[in-house]
Image 1 (cartoon, helix red, strand yellow):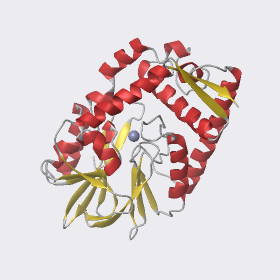
Image 2: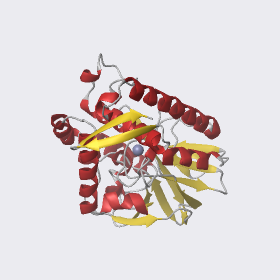
Image 3: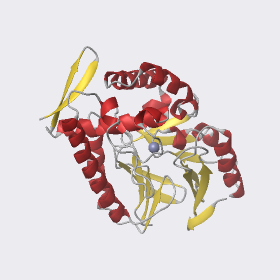
Image 4: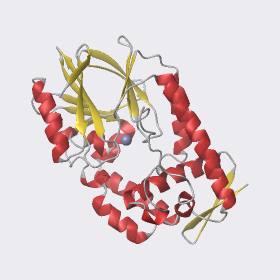
Length: 325
Ligand SMILES: [Zn+2]
C-alpha cells in the first residue's frame, strides 16, 4: 500500500515475484496541476495488481497520470503504457529509442547477442534464455506516447520542479531526477542501497563501466535530504557512492588477475573464474539468466580494463580473447 514519504510524494511498493531485486519502488507525485508516476513494474499480473491498487488508493485511475521513467528496463517501464493511457510517458531520449522503435530494439539485441557469442556464451543457452528473459516478455507492448528528455531539462509536473540528470552506465540513458527546492533525488537504478546495480555491455556505450564510474562521481556532488532509489531501501548518497566506487575498483583488480591467470580466454570462461554471490555449486550450475548477467558484468569490467590499457582484446574468427599487457 502507498506510503507518503514526503509531502505529496508517495511510494508504491511493487513486488517482483521470483526476482532477486524483490521489489520495485514506484513513486507518485500528486500535484494540483496533475499527477506524475515514476516507474511502474513488469508487465505481469502481480506488478499490475499492486501498482493499480496503490494508485486507486490515491484516487487515481488508469490514464489519470503522466509517467516518468528512470530508464528502459522492463521492471521499471513494463506497465507505463497501461498507466499513462493517452497521457505522456517521459524518458531520456537515448533510452526512448529502445522502447519506442522496434527496429532499433531488434538491431540492439542482435548486436548484443553477437557480442555474447563472440565472448563464448553458448548458443543453446542463449536460445533457451530468450524464451524466459523478462527483458523481452515483460517489457511494455508497442504503443504509448513517449517523449524523450535531454540532460539538464526541467519538468514542472506533479506539483514539483524536476531537473533531469543523464547518468549513463546502468543503461545508456539512465536518468536521475532532482527536485532542487525539496532536496529530493530519485536515483532509479543508478544508485541502489541493498544491491549493486548491474553494469553490462551496451552497443552504444563502448565502455559502460567507465561511463558508470563517471556518472557516480557526477551524482556524488549532490546533497539530497532524501534519496529515493528504484529498488528497496534508501540511505546516505555519498557513503553509498563511495562503496560502489570501491566495489568496482576491487572487481577490476579481480578481473585483471583472472585474465593474468587465464590468458587467451573470452568473457564467458573468465566470468566462471570470478566470484559471484549466487548459490550454485559451480559455474556450470548457474541458472542461465544469472550467467547472462555475470558474463555481461564481466565484459563491462574487461572493456574498462581495455580502455585503461591494462589488458588487450583480440578478436578472430568470431571469437574474442583477452591478454594482460
Ligand atoms: Zn535497471
